[in-house]
Image 1 (cartoon, protein in one colour):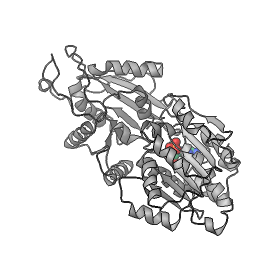
Image 2 (cartoon, protein in one colour):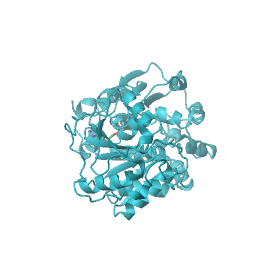
Image 3 (cartoon, protein in one colour):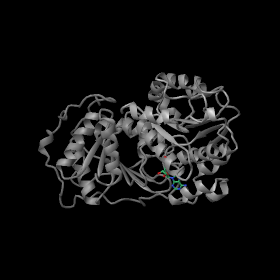
Image 4 (cartoon, protein in one colour):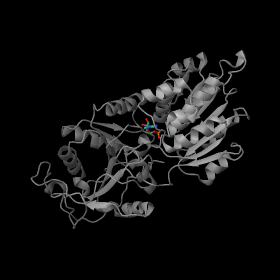
Length: 439
Ligand code: AMP
């Protein structure tokens, strides 16, 4: 199957080939013809499947070929794409611009954390496509800078995440302002009763497409666990990065404080690192992401919420510096790598406090993750588990292991002889596929 088989116009095909893509991913092959037919859609597709182009391409085509109607409709927006996060708004907006490069359509990204004025100006100048987070869009509606009365197509992207993040009321408010007659496309990794409730009556005779099993991690991601003491994770991470010459690593911590502290320590060890979390300004977050994408920083240390929807082509390594409290978040995290056909590696540094979390994750995955230890970093059996006090967004934990040698007693083994990771059993790459486990 080629993109040319999907009924897309020459201008769009041109921008697709400029991106270097010739084969549609499974979600694209299924969704594009249905959207072009004007069908409503319920798509179970996770980040990494190519879903963004799955809705962006046909929307661009529909808007560019369909009569825009009377001149009074000219400055009304015609498509609305609701997304959970600022980063995703920027990414989807980028996709709209990339794929719509040879068409005359205008788009705007509307999200919080930045000034209203530039967004107001672009909305008032007239845009065909609005990519927005729900809260900021409502602010613009209140200020009468966004007019949704001409919306022909609505996309709810990552609907499950939007509900997780508490946007249900905002979404309902926005939907109430849209014309009844419209095409609605719903993309979600999971379909909870809450989502079904939200879209009941909104979707008309929807076509269903599904490309990834719920909570199925990417087949292209090689996963492993390194058992290590909590106080030695940092040194092990530094050694892994140095020994393997990793150039682009996304590292997850549970807390903002943890992300800042780790990023600082990596910097001191001579590894270029930046932190990405909710306390950073929008400008700082975007800069960190851009620097990471351009390989100006080697390590991006992120919290779960901040990393949602991050899209980096062929990100090779994800490290769980701390396991997430919620097993599903593990799947989301490792879905940042091994996307759209490229292979990736996900490593978790697991200390004695986290054994229960690891069991939860393995239960969810329905398989055991390969375990490794690195010479010189073997866990000290005398160290007893401590409760993990720092929940999402919580403070720092105490740094002294109870009933164990104080952390300073074991010297960091950064360049210890023989300090290489244990031999890897089996192939690291487990085939490639388009499927990603990220939501
Ligand atoms: P998404 O699931 O929309 O976040 O897309 C994941 C990644 O796949 C993005 O980096 C896209 O640039 C890439 N991608 C989208 N469509 C294709 C395609 N047909 N072939 C190869 N890569 C693609």
